[in-house]
Amino acid sequence: MIDKSLEVQKQEIEATEDAERTRECMCFTPRADIYEVDDQLVIVMDVPGADEKAVDITLEKNVLTVNAYIEPVEVEGFGLAFAEYEVGDYQRSFKLSEDIDREKIQATIRDGLLRLYLPKATQAIVRKIDVKANNN
Amino acid sequence: MYRRYRVPNMWREVDRLQREMNRLFETTYPARRRQAAGYPAVNLWSNENGVILTAEVPGVSPDDIDINVLGETVTLSGVRNIDELPETARYHRQERGYGAFTRSVQLPFNVDVNQVEANFKNGVLAVNLPRAEADKPRKIAVKTA
Image (cartoon, rainbow over all chains, first blue to last red; front, side):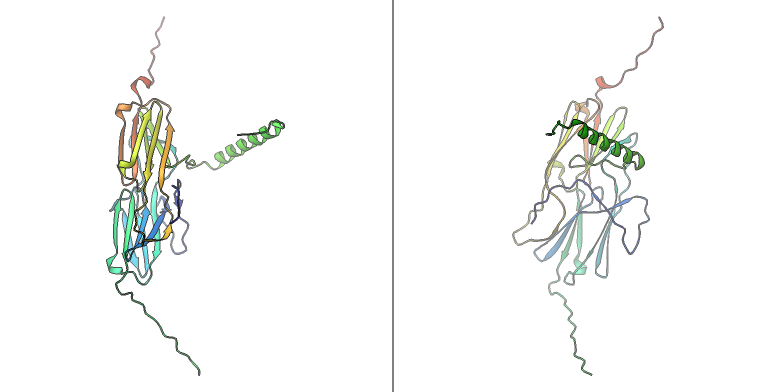
């Protein structure tokens, strides 16, 4: 474990090679911790402003994508006088290894912290492909 | 800061040049946001009756946040804890910081301490800091002699 001090700035997402975003707001890459405990992988992500309805998690093939759609903040009757941070969406993808049980992935959100629980399959499904010698 | 003043003109000139460059960049590319002076970064929303301060502090429990108001100064302090894990746990990646933080913001007016309200929702803190009644601008009627 590394000692890590609090980070002030959010990281803006970099243009991805597969698809560009079309929503009219900024998008950030949420900072994440990944640890393994008791045969499960836990991903902890900072998504301030997101609740359970704002978060969209999809699993396609072996890529787990987390999207959090944050409504722009407007305070009625007040004008933004000074800004050090910006509000925007969050997006991040993780490539899962073969031994994660796809059916049992769970997620919770609390105080702007998203936790993904990825249990490992009791019997890791490992498909090994034999290489045959071809001496023709 | 220690600075040799044996060659004062040169350093003064460098400072001036730096200020000038900063100003130039700010006017050409208006800064969308300022660099935060510390954790957490804050946004201030204002109107004539006061200010609402917002800050993103994901993963900090509302019980762990202290808000102190003294005159014109608001101080946010708190601690972000790391997940307590058994010894068998193994980190694959750690990007999130943790620890104690303190951040003071000076407002341009005295705060009515009794009316301060704080809200915490989904990791976003919002503190309503109304201007003290005695500090509000008063209109002075001009009488004709």
